[in-house]
Image (cartoon, rainbow, N blue to C red; front, side, top):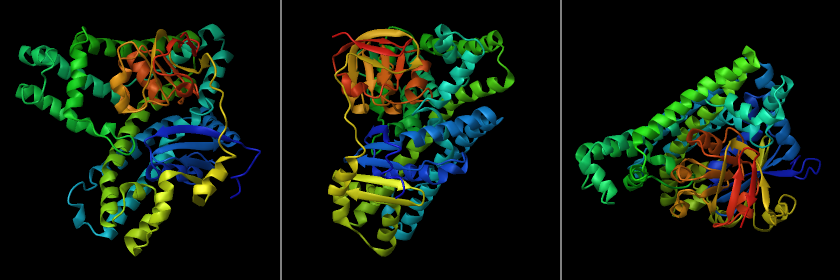
Length: 506
């Protein structure tokens, strides 16, 4: 372990992820210190993750993660076509992972041999690791130190952009030119809502809160059922969850009772996308941006589209692999949670050689630490885990009245804070509230649509929160680091997403 206690490179919190397990996270953490160098030339030296049940915090070396980001940005800026190659391969690897995931058996798993269960597990591990060698590149380039954002802004200042216009022009130039899957999903739902608006019987049921599948006209129900079958898995983050028909009925009811027609919302969404493209072209011309930098800006916007594309494929994979994990647990008389805290080599030993350390797995379920560097990884539990964490975790001052972050989408808003971490928190979200989260994901998009502004602890310009806020045109501040630890439900705050500042009013 060359880097675990390297005091010259202190640990830095990368992400705080609720409802996430060892099974999912260890595959990408291991990839970061090994295979990630394949398409970047530089992997991370060290990675560490703390687990308290299904809640994880993962750490990078502060210097190490900055250097990884700079290495990628240098390639994006200096190697013609590198960023486009990354986006192309993100789509390719996401499609490969999705195609495999769709074939993972979900029924009659008791008929599958241990050997074949292991083959499914091993293949998923291989494909998902390869996926990360491409799909993590945009994240590593910008999420933790804003390497790419800072380099792009420096270029804008070098060509004469003033500080006063810097954020405005940066947003305009990095807007995606294509629809993300979140945009497409919302568009499809709005088209269903539009059909309901033209069906008096169906509209009356929604308006009177009587829209249940037994009462809906068959043609309307078929549309909703088709939508459900296409997107049900997107709530699976990262241990469990599925959208139900009722979830989509409730989303449609929100649209139909909003006072604005679905057609108007659709038109506004598409007009904004079209206007963004026009504005980008005008800005290119205004600033006389050359072809090379136009290509970089276009790829930056493309990172936002491919982020959602690959995320949907990944969620499907995790949803379908859950059935495999449940079957491994069932036939070995242990809990699914124990299986989710096993290393791949331990899964192999269990399935092929019947070797099981059940007590060790129970200890990991409560608290454990995973550490990895090149060609080495290990799990610590109990006292060993606590001892290691003494050098990792830092005390953070939360007694402050003002937060600062990066701009996800410009604008200003004032409202009551609602802390929304996962889908089950959405019941407290009301129209005009300020949504505050660690980091947003597809499962809380319905709450994001109600927000007057969005504030997150984590994420760069290509984060989920930044992408969705731009598509919905909602003010958004990202990367505040400590928002959910400073703010509480009911706090009145003012969000200035033009400057990246959140002020607590009351």
